[in-house]
Image 1 (cartoon, one colour):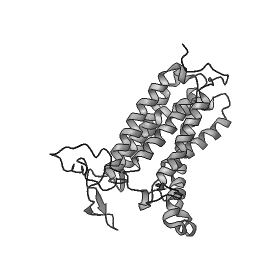
Image 2 (tube, one colour):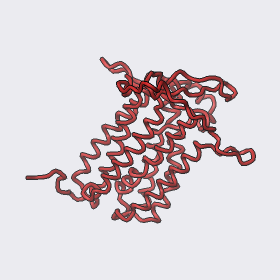
Image 3 (cartoon, one colour):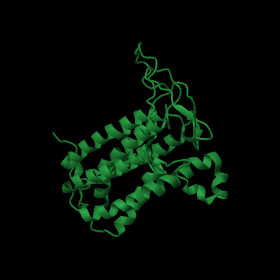
Image 4 (tube, helix red, strand yellow):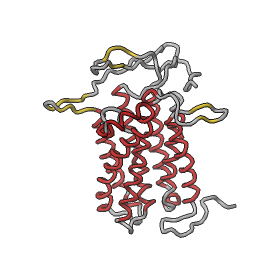
Length: 305
């Protein structure tokens, strides 16, 4: 499946990859990488955006959100890494993780999974909510939902700078050649022209989703039905990720996911993980549309003549 392959820019065969050093600066023996800075920027700006929108909530206090921030960091890191191992690492080399327990913590070798990080944050919020019973769970998740695309945007830009998680081979006019690295970590050659799928994701999962969710949040009728925005995030991210996976090189070279579907063949692991998010997100929106923040039934959102 070619992404927008019908568009033609006859004077542009491919776009040169901007060779940006993944290391921004080194402080002594410690390299400061763009990838690390993207996580920091996403967390800080997301936190700032959450605090700026606390005034629109009924039950969430600033002090409580400050406490939750640490829980979220733990959920992102541990959930993201464990998810990467379970969803992708086991398919590639399961024996490695049984024979070397430290491999589970090797974030630098295999990275992290968004779907694992999402589940990690969700679990962290559930646990945190047990200690903060006065704060409505769905109000908290809505606040996180309107800020999460900020982190997704910076994360995908960092993937692009690192020349990783690029797309499949293509002949579209905006194709790029990405660097490949030998065993010693030194760049040795370039790929054939490929989709810059990291930029597709930064645009769709980052900018577009950020705008859509915040427009939803600004609507008092939707905001009062806490959980709808959370469902919108789940469905929106799942939908965009599912689409981009058609042109994205499968993670860790794993072409097919866990299952085969009669008449449809196989999907990538990313698509298999995104499809339940779409279903769960739509179901959550349908469920919460008749509930107010107080938990009492609300009038229908639909207009009556």
